[in-house]
Length: 182
Image (cartoon, rainbow, N blue to C red; front, side, top):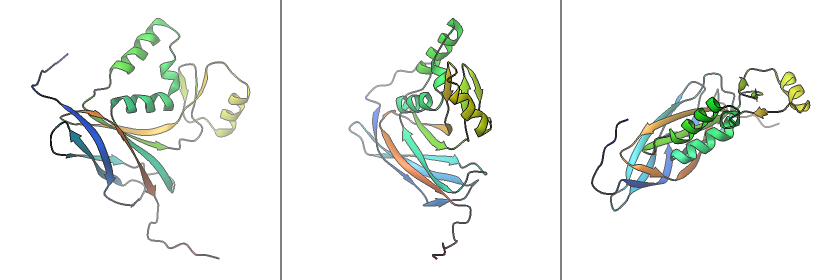
């Protein structure tokens, strides 16, 4: 494990986040930045990019830009079965997930619909047909977890980050079409 000690305060607050556009097509790369405010220093931009899946349907999708704890919390919400250990090995993995996030990273979390994600115990069933997922949920099988799809990414920074900002990524396959009112 590599460790470096630097003189001075390296904390920075995430004060704003912006995207470079308003509407994206499936397969586009979203570009934006987080504006951070280091302690007793001028504000700085931390640029980021995130690829939108090519098969993403039209809609509005929440994008969270945050610190390591925000990233961990969102991962726990999206994949709860990974944080419910039943064996010593699973406990070790869960602890590693909790201590693993680096605090000098900007965490991006784009929530996407992935159909009917489900996990039974530690077995993830992301491509389960909706009818089968509904059946399993209705049976009240122990250790059954609903999962949420997400695109995640981390971006390195020179500061230990704190904070969270919410954005919306609007996806339209044909962004220039004007809806016809009837």
